[in-house]
Image 1 (cartoon, rainbow, N blue to C red):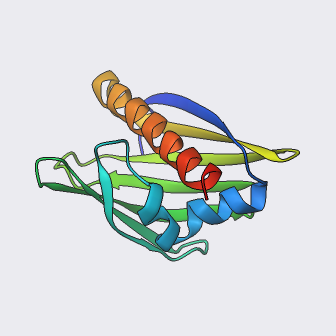
Image 2 (cartoon, rainbow, N blue to C red):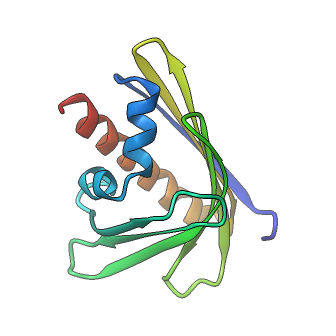
Length: 144
């Protein structure tokens, strides 16, 4: 991975840290909340172990699909995940995502740090995507 642009997205979720971590790392739960609207999650696979892989298929409003995949580098349940991030959009770049879960009593702050992004346009797109994903996570957990 080469050095690139980074972004930080954060959101407080009204749920305990263990619940939020589980929603982030369970394929079944990811399918329910992942994707900035109107994007939805068509499929998700998670092998939650260091060296394990994940795969998320975004279903786009035009009927197309984009697959995101990578490998878990760090797992410190329920406080931290670090994983690679590759999108099958033809761009041959891999970036790095760190997700921190900070317990705040009955709330959890989720902090997404996405590093090594190739360019500013991609960063802006990812920033909207992460914001939408965090909105979906909050909706899913806080209304369950």
